[in-house]
Length: 617
Image (cartoon, rainbow, N blue to C red; front, side, top):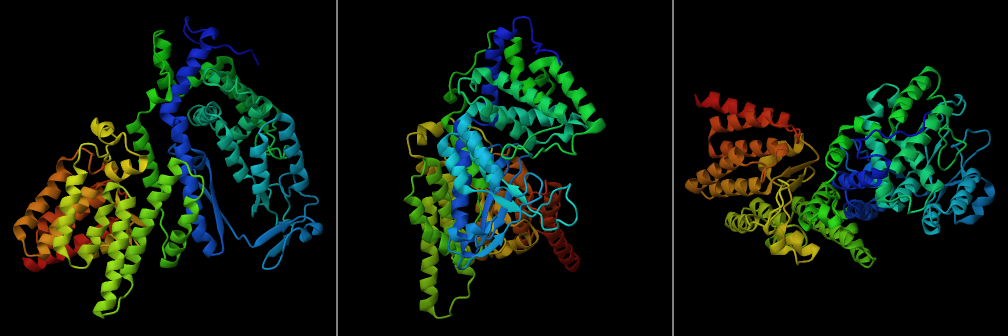
């Protein structure tokens, strides 16, 4: 292979690599996340795991999440793998280990490891990895201690080269160790990982041979290169292109040798029987072409071209000097809000809700960051809502005193939730009041919500950064900003009855039905005025809802969630007796992106309308 030859414009030869690297670094911060954004993504997920683990323990299981999504990436293709195991199963590889722990109540499994391929039965082999890490100085000792104390898992996947006689062969999983290693990277190393992922997707995978390389191979190569030279002076923003290039050269060597050693067990060649023969030759030829181009091969990827073209076309291009220039306070809050609202997983039983709520005081006592604290606060608000409606679904005694006690308990829980959650959280109390026939109270809450939601500093769903956001809530704490300025979908879990009018949608659609707050406000107003016999205000609220759907530009009703919004308009028209209008709205719902998968429910409602129209005429 020829030496590196960077093909850049005349005024950007090798002496300008540092500048181009910094431009790439900043551009990737905008696309993949700044250090703060990546950190908050991880901390939100970590807090979710801490909360969910409490409920899982009650059922006698443990779980963890791995994959690029857990690592902090938010590509459309980012994967999220969940591994569940029984903590009562303990694995030993020789009988002498039996005495190391109390085996009462445990199922001890003896692992036979003789004559197995590298990567299937582990302890002796992995000792060399620990020694290598200590010799190389990466990861640092504290991270190494965390990895070794966490251990590894075995999963029921056999080697693809084993004989049929090894039917009970298992594979070692180092996914938790890999996640800890990625967390320990500095941001340049993390972005280099991102560069490799984008390069794989947009450049390497453009051919059949390139598709033989997977993201896991590239992550392994990055681990080897960081350990080979862990010096932070090398892994810095102005050296990002060089960091990519050393990884690319290692990839070339691995393909040339048909050997990609596993980072934890080097004897395990991950290319074995995979990159050989004619496929190997074609892949070598492809990589040779990129090598001859030098780091300019990145320009074959549209993402890199978009980021780097402004800097290459103008020597006067100004590079942002700090993270604050890349991400404003409003941008940080928008990202954090979106991350929180994507992770809204709630327990499905009353017992699990109580178990998690009981564990929250102990979680609060931990040394939590502001992101973890707010994630815990937000999760608490959602669990309180879930608990309240689970209690509401329980058949209450017909005795007035018993019903009153339960009702007050539910109302208090929902009010407490509104003090913890985002500004839209109060709507859940309105939903409960509607369920219990207190229509005037619903209308009062709807009025309060509409006034609060219309404040100019409230962050809705259009991703536009409101100018008055910083002026109004910028000096407040993160928790206060959430309670006063963050809008969230109202989520109806299909295991619980929230509104009888949405029965079909909850039964036929996705596990959770998210509804835009303004759509729900108008829906509640239509239904309450109708129940109260106030048809004038009912029709006005119906008109307001229709106007919102017809003229909103995505600020209050995102385009990817309009199937349920048009469905709700149709339901309201149906209740009010406007059958032709309901039919049109249901058909419009079918024309939207099927986010909620409610097409079957829509078909049922269209059938009901058509039947009523036939009976009427």
